[in-house]
Image 1 (tube, helix red, strand yellow):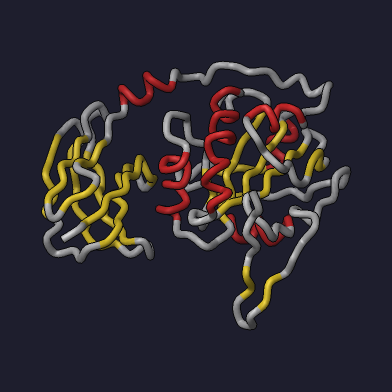
Image 2 (image 1 turned 180 degrees about the vertical axis):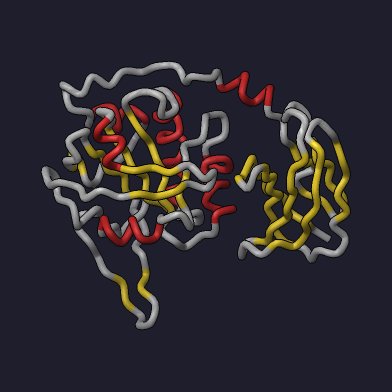
Length: 269
């Protein structure tokens, strides 16, 4: 499967790159970086290196077909190797083409059934893509605890095993359970928006989320807030979307200023 190239605007041109993370050849030292994911968690390479962690990055954008096709392999790896609680850190890096809602929705939409890796959008995704010199998507690259680029372009990827096969023999990376069982997380944090296709009303369920008041936003695909209200955790309520035009939207739940969860819906009239 051929990966799409990033078109450069301002002039009609495209650059063909042989090496995908072209600024860091295999064996080179990767400069420290700090990014913040859509949930507000900060990721710093020096911190991970000091803790003896390997870091495997996935550079992507939402409407990239090959990115969508390979999302299940990457999410399966993230879950199989401990959901970043072990010695392997998986982070999705959006190239700046998408807002945070689409960035966060990527693995939810294209890797259902697996835990979702942290995803970086406006928190530094575009800048890191440029720093690494990524020009085709997806690009997967593995960095060692010594901050050395182990593999700048893991490709082609045929299954989760493709990632495992590039682990150094002395890495010590082993499958492990996530700290919290994925099914338990899903059961304890129930946020649903139904139906996902509607002409006016949707029912929002916030059961199992404790007892607190949260902010509920409906965003369009450009990231513009179209509807805002508050909702009490542990309740079920109905939203009237009659004022919104037909199209696709994200319903985002926030608490303490951080994204708690996001669901995608379509309004069709």
